[in-house]
Length: 155
Image 1: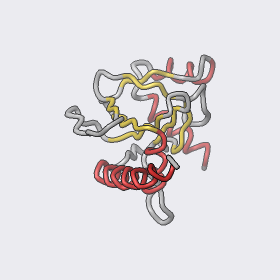
Image 2 (image 1 turned 90 degrees about the vertical axis):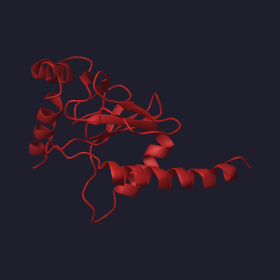
Image 3 (image 1 turned 180 degrees about the vertical axis):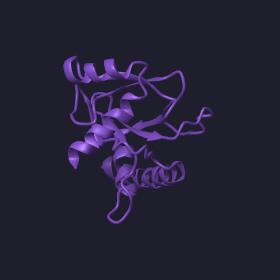
């Protein structure tokens, strides 16, 4: 079952590449990272890691569907949520970055980390993405929690 999920995840993710075979070859025999263009099958909302990890915890609850693909970049200290394409990029907030058509995203294969990139929730090949409304609500709640905790950290 896991091999089937990884295989579907690889095919789904590689489909975003101009040359899916080359993409998979890079994952297996190159540096392990491929640059994929956002905006066709998915966009990526990137947030600071503290905010992103807390928001992911809020959307990934027992009994709830597994959330969409989520990537962490430990070098940059960011978490990327894969969301449906939205050329208007209506996401607004301090520290938010939005990758849509014309933007390129570095991704490792779904089955292993590469460099500083690792899947927190790998793509399963079904096309499941984060629901924007659910993600926005989780980010707002996480931001509120972090705002309450900030004064306590300064002590």
